[in-house]
Image (cartoon, rainbow, N blue to C red; front, side, top):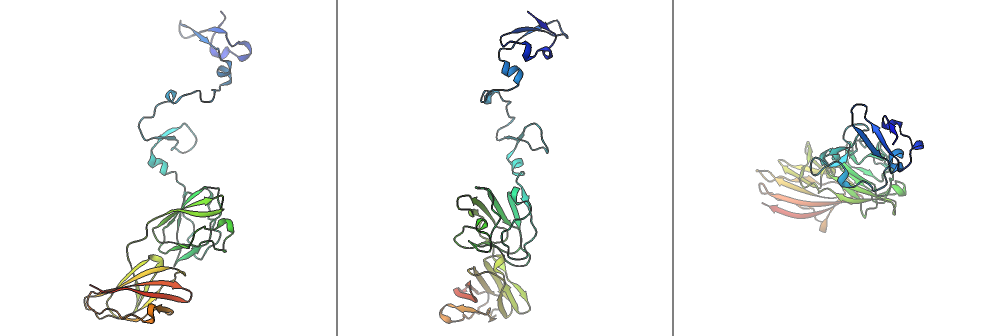
Amino acid sequence: MPKIPDLNAITAANLASADVFAVVDISADETKKVLFSEMQLAFAGSIADNAVTYAKIQDVTASKRLLGRNTAGAGDPEEVTLLQALDWIETITPTILSADTNDWNPTGLSTANLIRVASNDHARGLTGIAAQAANRLLVLANVGNYALVLRAENAGSSAVNRFAFPNDVALHPLRSIVLRYDGTFSRWTAVAAGPENEVPVAGSTSGSVVTFYVSTGRKQTFTLNGNYSVAFGASWDGAVWTVELRQDATGGRTVTGWPGGTKWAGGVTPTLSSAPNAIDRFCFIQVAGGYHGFVVGQGIA
């Protein structure tokens, strides 16, 4: 039987598949026999597909672990927890929207999973987002103080970038929506949206005028401590919101005027309840040229 001093002396050219060599361990007296019956495995360095079972792979150290790599850069696989994996979500915070926007394509969109979006001074319209690969999921999170209105099938954006919604969708502050790009329809579709902002938002006063901004929430409230005229901040056609007007402990406060273009159901402008601490609730719908107003309830104690 031929002998070689170490494995480095073996080559595919001088070894047959059934040869047996005694390899001399020069650091000890023991002689080891090495059988090379599979030349492909020994010299090509490859393992057949599906040849290694899960049982032959190193065990993970605990349950609920993923195999990946959390350490920066290339390297060996590591055990990763779910929280660590969630940190892999690519997040971008584009420049604040200062105008209605078409065919939005912020820097980093192609790799982002989450976009933190905001507008600068009032509700902004978004008519489309640059088309992505089929089934691409994208989360839009409104981190600003005003609503973002996703316009349904709006011609301002190219067809492939539009939103396939039945109606415009208002994304209010601190709300999120999950979008999916449908490769068949070549449109963005809504997968899920966060809950509506249920906390009433207080109107903003300037002198004897109280202004309600629907872009900050669909439930508006204000406690009257004097006589005020009512104004509405910028919104959009089809927007619906409620206004709650409360009398203070004195009572007898009045609304001296409603926004221009407000038309009340039945053609009658309501008179506020005057009792101390009384509550009146109204609903408004923005339409072309103004608002439609409805009395929800009055004199609620």
